Length: 126
Image 1 (cartoon, rainbow, N blue to C red):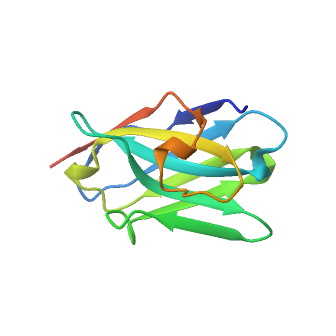
Image 2: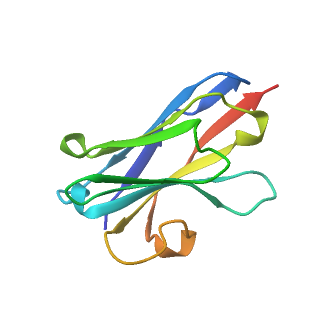
C-alpha cells in the first residue's frame, strides 16, 4: 500500500494555470502507475491523466484535457505532478491522485486503482 497526499488546488480564473502535486509514501514509488482523476458535483469520477515509468515515461490523457494538461513524476521525491493550463470552468472538480502497481490493466479506469488520496478542490471561475 502507498499513502497519497494531494496539494495545490485552489481558485483560478478561466485561462489560468494550477499545478497539483501528489506526494506518496513508501520506497517503491517507481513501481506504481500514478493517475489523476476528478469528480465534479453530481458526476462520476473520471480519468484525467496517468503516467508510468518502466525505463521510459509513458503518459495518458483524457481527450478533454489533452494539449492543456501535462503529467510528470519525480521518482527521487516520490511525487507526481499535474500541470493544468488554459483552465476552463468545466475543469472545476475535486482532483484525486491514485496509484496502482504497474501491470496489465486499463489505466483510465477508476476501478483498477487501489490507493487514493483525499482529493484537492480546483475551482475555475468564468
